[in-house]
Structures are given as structure tokens and as C-alpha cells.
Length: 365
Ligand code: SF4
Image 1 (cartoon, rainbow, N blue to C red):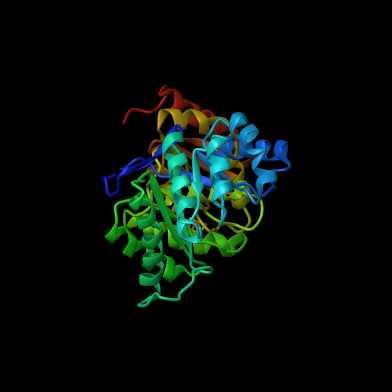
Image 2 (cartoon, rainbow, N blue to C red):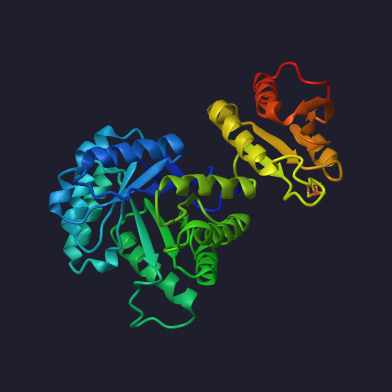
């Protein structure tokens, strides 16, 4: 990717400067339940998160941060509002990043002390402007102008204190406002940008709105780190983020399932939905880690009949196309190999995915 932004250092990772987009999420458990928070960070990491944030509401909770930092294999970020003493406590406990809007800290000396602590501990700061909570007094112009000017007001405070290890986010629950504000922000500054839609909702509602917003920004070349906000288990946020990255060709590894919607031609001869789901699950479970290391993309087509089936199946790395009751033709790298019974398809695809991963036993190009 083109280097549109400078880089920010977040503990052991960097964001921006054309690096791959970093996927992150947020714990939904209070810090006082420290072991559960540690466990959730571990699960998010296993699922693909490279940075996890948690909220710190008071000094009592700040007392748990060091244990979380010491137990986490990935950098963690403390989400703090208003209280500069909490920010300093989080920085001194070792978080790699704090999310804090310096303009919301009333004491100039407080801001200076946070910045000094962040500089001496190598901690990054994310300015996070949220459309639902900005004070519009004293700001004018379009909604996106107001949101960007808010971010710049916080940014100026950091820059006036010679602090530059900064990431910026501007989010709103409205797709268009978020898109316009991030496009304006990207035009007017070169700090790394954290993208996402806030309060996006739950289930398909959140998935679709987030995909439209994050996908459009990524296609514009905007976005260095991403969080898909979804009501519910944060593990689903990680899966959604990787699916979006995959859809806009910003992932250099992954299992890509191409499957048809089915129609009257399948005539219930094959349970294509179950087949696509089982193949996706089985291949990811067995090979995702290795293809992540190998930086490979495996395209698998699961098609209902001989109309569009052979075309898609032969263009994919592995493909199956329905060809009669419970029967599918199996393709490997464009060559038809054999007919397979529906109940043998998952095993056969696992075997051929194994050949692709090992790079052996493949038909000649
Ligand atoms: S591939 Fe066949 S079954 Fe699938 S949607 Fe197209 S025509 Fe229908």
C-alpha cells in the first residue's frame, strides 16, 4: 500500500505508513474481573486481534491494569475519559496506547503530565471523536467539518506539547457522516486513522452498515486500523473485520468461499448451504494458521449446478459443482478430477486444500 500516513508505534506493533491494516477489538468485561478480561484478550488474540482495548473507569480499576498488561501477548489500550490521573496510572501500568481526548481534560497541567508520561513510556495516544458526544458550541460548517475540527483541536493540544505518536478516529453511528468526515480527515492530515462505525447495532444490521463504511474507506485507501463495533460478543467483531478486509483485497491470506445462492435448478438435490458452511469451517479450522504464515489465499467455489458451476469451480483453486442427486464434480486448479458424493465433499476438499498448502500433488498449470 501507498504510504499515505506516517506510522504510530503501539508497543510491539506499528500502525500506518502503508503497513497491513491492523484488526482490533474491545473487551466487554469490567477490569475488576481481571481473569475474565485476560481470558477474553487471549480469545480475541487467537481469533486475529492485534490490539485490544478495555475501559478504565476509576482508580480502583486502574489497579488491575498491570496484571492484564503482563498477561497479554498483544499490546493493550486503555480507554479513558476526562481524568488525567487515570491516564497517567494506565501509562505507568504499561499499556501500549491510551484512547483519550485531551481537549476534555480541563487542566493544562494535567494534559502536559499525561503527555510527559506517554513520551517517557513510549505510549501512543488515540484521539477518538464520536459524533454522538461532540460539543458543537463554537464550531461551524458541515457535520464533517465540525467532526474533523474537533479532532484537530485535540491534536493541536498534543502537538503543542511536542507529542506525535498519535492515531485519530472519527466515528458516528451514521454511515454517510463517518465516510465524509474520514475522507476530509485523510485529506487534511497524515496521522494514522482508526476506522469504524460506532454504535453500529447488532447482527446483520451492524455487519452491513460497518461493511459499507469500512469497505468504502479502505477502497479509498483510508484506514490503518479497524474495529467493527457490534453489540454482543467481541469475537464476532474480529471475524467481521477480516471478512471486510478480504472482500476489499486487503488481506494477503485467507479462505475465500464463493458459493451460489442456489435456485430451482438445485431442486433440493444438494444441501448447498450446509455444504458451504461445513467446508468454510473445516478448512479454516485446519489450515488458517498455516496459510496465514504462508500468506496464501485459497479460493473455494461451492456451486449448485452445471449452469454457472463449472465456470466458477474451475476458476477457483478448488471447486465443486452439483451434477445430479447428491453428486458434485470436483475441480482442482481448473481441472476436473472426479465426481464426489455430497457426504464426502468436505473430506475431499480438506485433502486438496492440504495439497495446495504443501504445494504437492497439484495438476500442471
Ligand atoms: S449455479 Fe446453478 S444452482 Fe446455483 S444459482 Fe446458478 S443456476 Fe442456480
